[in-house]
Length: 275
Image: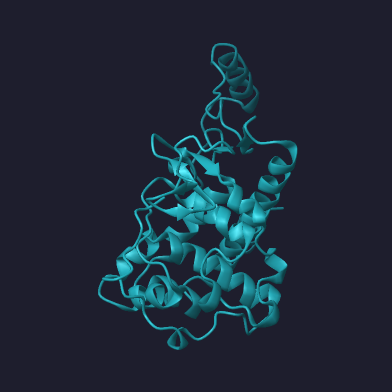
């Protein structure tokens, strides 16, 4: 018995007799039959047709590359799913406000992580051919991957990626921290970054607002904190930080001390154009 039904029964059994409104005159049998007849004329709704829960690695990737891409994406989903679970449990706790600001709405972040985990993946394609010749270019140098400029739902995974980043479970080993190693210190974290650049996975409103831990924390604590929820690295850092704090080193994590690393001088080392 549902709680509301039980409560109603309890109230009616203990209260004096009341004159209740009369029910409509039609019978339940008639209403069921009417509904059955209606179904004969109603066209079933296939509102989710064409969607997919699966990513695609195209034929430019060999079987080994496809397996490694699958491993990275699986780890990315582990990170994102835990970030969502932590948000559901704790909302705007200290970790949340550190990365997104004290006035940020945790439900906005929750919607993003939920979309990344369970949203449509039908347009998301990973490829291993350097279609835009950017894996080793004068613009970016040698990079592990990029989105195709003409179609941001397509991600090129460059040869450098397959040099293998640490696995998620080793993220905090041997003194490793987010401060030292940044937002892409594991294979899954790198794929989180790639997904956040794709319109299908993230909605297309996020960008590389900041890079380092110190910059991300400063953004969330400053006058421009509303940008933090749209900062790709901030979204990554929250996922990594909660996973480390809850799973790898419970109650401790491995964020590191941002004061030990000097701020980047963007006059001499300008940010690269987003890729």
